[in-house]
Image (cartoon, rainbow, N blue to C red; front, side, top):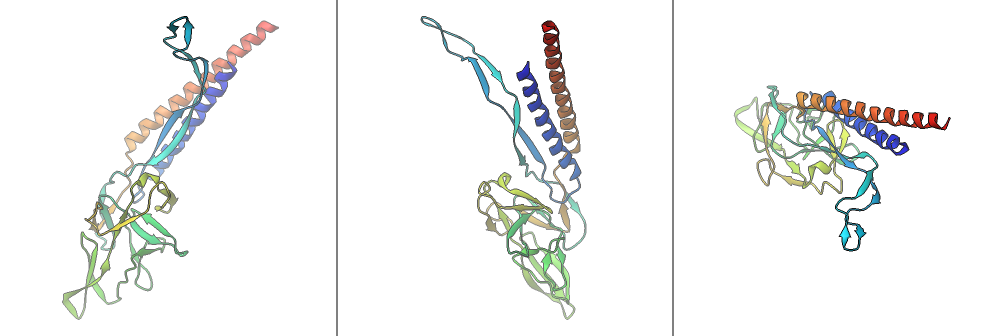
Length: 263
């Protein structure tokens, strides 16, 4: 009965974490490039009162054992990098990735970060930056006199000028990076991810080549959160939490009945 109290408490803690993850998914349903987190669970260590296959008598083994579990825990929350919906914004500096890959950005400290959010902007010096002002890598500068900015599917950025409307000039080219294990990236907030030993090193490629996707000008990728799926998961976790509280209540009632016997 005492073990049941602790076992049920692990279940309550597990479901509480699952609800926290679902709440974060729902909170970011409209976040550009957001990737939903999916929690996975493991059972805890077992107490072997009687091992399966133990010898029962001479030449006889037990077909089943007597193993009492200790509950459950969250083994991890992995990002699911499925494609989000592409929404037309008609903004020439909005770029969505159709397929695998990330844009690389550079922090003021010089560290590299990676993002699926293609809401690019131009800062005071003409450089392409994220909404937080982080530079896109490779750095691309848009001249003040540039007109009709065009971003090709391969990331090539061209523009015309007032004096040469029929002679577009190339300003640079967006590149994408991919990872062997994107689920191993560390979420940093601000729609940014950081490389980890689990993700592997970034591999830079031209859009449309070496396994990375294409870029679409005038579009943004929305989150891949499905509200209906998240709500079903929320209800399931809530009910599981309630069942675990009932286990605690039942064990408590049994302990109370035992106490009454002693009296």
